[in-house]
Image (cartoon, rainbow, N blue to C red):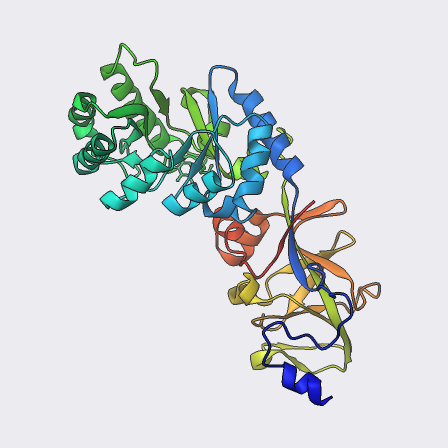
Length: 394
Ligand SMILES: *Cc1c(COP(=O)(O)O)cnc(C)c1O
C-alpha cells in the first residue's frame, strides 16, 4: 500500500503490474469510417465525369471529419487523380504520411515563409494576386526550383481569386516568370447547389469567356470550376477537372438530386447507453429542466455531448437510431452526455449502441437531416465532430 502511493509521482505509474488494460475506443462514443465507401464513391464520380476529366478529391478539414489520410488513400484507390486541401499544414501532413500525388492548396498563403514551405513540400498554392505570384517567383528562383501554381479567378463567388478583369494581365505576368509554372486556372461556384441556375450560368459564362481569351490552350494547364454541386448538376461544368468534397463522402449537395448514383455515406457517429433511468411523470430532465416528462418514462443516458460535436442548439430536436428506429433526444445536451426517451423502446439497455448520424439497419440519419434540425448545412455538420471521438476505420 505504502509503495503504491509513493509511486504515484512516477509518470509511468500504474496501480497494477498486470498486462496493460487498454480502454476500448468503442466504449463511449466514436466515429466509424468506411474507406471502401469513399473508394466506391470516387469510382462512381470518376465514371460520371468520364475519361477526359480529372477527379480532385477534396480532403480538407481532416477529410470532412473522416480522417484525411484515410479518405485520401481510399479516394486515390477509387481513381481520384489528385487531392485538394485548405491549409499548408493539411498538405504537409499528407506528404508526411507518404502521399505523393499532386496536392493543391485551396486556401491562399500570404507569407513568403509559408510559400517556401509549400514549394519544399511539393504542394501547389492557389494564387489570387500579383503579390503572391511575385513572391513565388522570388522564392523559386532562390531555391533554383520550379514552382507549380494554380491561378484562381473570381467569377462571382467574391471570396478568393483575382478580379475577373485582372485575370489576363495576371496570367501574362505569371507567364513572364521563369520559375513559376501555371498548372491550373480555376474558379468557384457560389450557388451551384440551389435549384435555380441563374448565377451558376453567369459564372459559367464568365469562365468560358476567360477560356476563350486563353485559346489556343496551354495543354499542361488544367481548367476547373465545379465542386460537388457543379459536378452533379451539369457535365458542361466539368472542364478538365472537378473538385469534389461532399459527394465523395456519400452525399448529394442538394438532397433532391442524383440520388440514383449509388453514393454511400462513409461515416457513422455512434455512442453507448451508459445508464437507464425509470422516472415518474412530471420530472425535469437535464440542465434547465427544458423537458418535463409527460408520463412515467424510461430514459437512457448516452455518453456523447457537445464536447464531441453534438451541438447544444440541437437539444430536444434530434433523434438517434437504434435497430433502425428513431428515438427522440430530450432535455439539454450537455458537454459529455445526452438523454434519450426510450419509454417506447424497451430493447434499449445499458451498453446498447445508438447511431447519432449515419446508417443503422435500413435507416439513415444524414447530414441533411441534421441540418434540417439545426439550421446548418451538411458540410458544417460533417466537420463539426470533435477529435475526442476516436475515428475507427472499418
Ligand atoms: C471545399 C471546396 C471544394 C469542395 O466542395 P464540395 O461542395 O464539398 O464538393 C471545391 N472547391 C473549393 C475551392 C473548395 O474550397
